[in-house]
Structure formats: structure tokens, C-alpha cells
Length: 341
Figure: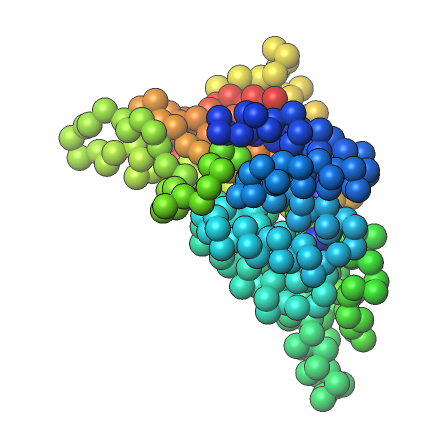
């Protein structure tokens, strides 16, 4: 899982305008597999802007693809030191550590990514994979000591089943993965290839706020908390919606849509639900990840959630910007409109 990259938009801050063309050219070359040429472009940018976070991040990705994990780890580690508020370098460090079998280090890196950005779905998913890997090793050791332990055999089989469907063929090269005698070694699911956005050329004096927050509180009402206090509830709903989608639980997935949900293309609710049921049920597996989520309230019962959505299935992989317009109904947040760019 972990060695799979997904594409995203390369956002540039105003301070990096002069170098925008070179960065974009380098990113295109990287996506085309022309790693040496991409590295030359990046080094050219860094010669003039040695603290440029986007160029340094891209250099780490290029070094990874060139089979230079030690240099890539050094590049991402330096980024975490200069920009400790960014979660992406921590996540990609975990990718590299996991490919080397250093699961304790991968776990620590992912915990740091989540600490800086609690709604970073990719890091949460990858951390779950690390826990599963470490559990499979522990169960395997237990079976080596007691082969008759049927409970441990069952637990180990559950982990095998967990990774057999959606991750087979997606692990890192075999030479980088330690072999387990009982369970397939799951690799981590995603490494970010989107450079951190809106980062100044020099390290900030203090980290920017990392937790998603509402930018416009709801009008004050008697005995009603400010809308910003509810951003966590909104994000919890969005993450649960993505989890139901990933689990292919169509009934639960559809329950997150409001009765007055605006149907795409003007189709009927029945036709839309039938189409969603077919599209969710058909793939052998689905993985939906959410990153960079922000919440904006228009009032205490209406919110807009913007985020980057990564979608992986047995037949398709995509990454898009998405906006969900949410409404609070009966104490629950539901999706009223859905827009994808």
C-alpha cells in the first residue's frame, strides 16, 4: 500500500512566483518519470532559494524514485525541522521507514503528522497499516512459541484477509520488505506527491494554526455555542462518510445525504441512489482519503467543508478538490450539496 503515490495540484505562495515555472516544469518532469531532469530543475530553484519548502519536498520525492532512500530521508527530515507544522514530510518519512522495515520510526513519524494536522486522513490510514504490520509480527512470534494457539491463528488470519483484497500487488518491492512466515507484510498506503502549499521561503517564526477551524462564526444565539466549536463534529461526519464509502457500506454511505440533497444532473433520488449503489458495489476494493479539510460556517446550522479527496479502487485512481455543503438536521450533520473540481 504505502508506496502508492497520488497526484495533486501544486499550489504556490506569492513569495514563490518567480520560481513558479521552474517548479511546475520540475513537477511535470517528475510525473513523466524524467527524474534526472526534474532534479536539475529543482536544484536550480534551490540554488537561489535554499529554504524553498516545495522544491525541497519535490527533491525528496525524486530521490525516493531514484532509489536513494537515505538521501530522501535526509531531505524530508530536514523539512520537518524547518517546517514542523507541515504534516506531509512526516508522512513521507513514514513511507520510507516502512519500506525499510523500521516500523517504530514510521509510527513516530505518522504520530507527528497527525499531531500537526489531526484531520489528515492519509496519515491515520497509514498508521493503521503500521499497527496491523506490527500486530502481525507479534502474532507470528506468539505462534512460533505456541503453534497450538488457535486464537492467535485466527487473529493472524484476520490480518491476512484485511490486506489480501485491496493491497495485493501494491506493496513496496520485495527486497525492501521483511518476510513474515505467516502473514503477508502490508506496506503503507500512500505517500504525498503534492508539495506543501502556501509555505514561505524561510521557516516561520512560529507554526501556523494546524487544526481546521471555522473562519466565520455563526451569529450569537442564546444558549447556542459558537459555530466554530462545532467544526470537529462536521469533520467527524465527513470522515465517517469517507469511511463508509471505503468500507463499501452503501446503506451507511447514503445515510449521510440529506433528504433535500441536490441531485447531480437533475436525476431522481431513486436513480441517483441506484447509480451510487452500483458504483460502490462493483469494485473489489475502495479507498477514500481526505486531507487539508477546512470548515466554514454560514450560520450555526450550515457549513461548507473543502478538502482534497484521494480515491483508489481496483479499476481507478484519482485525486480531486471537493466541497460538501452540510446542513444540521436532528442533531446530525448531513450532506446537502456535493461539488468536485
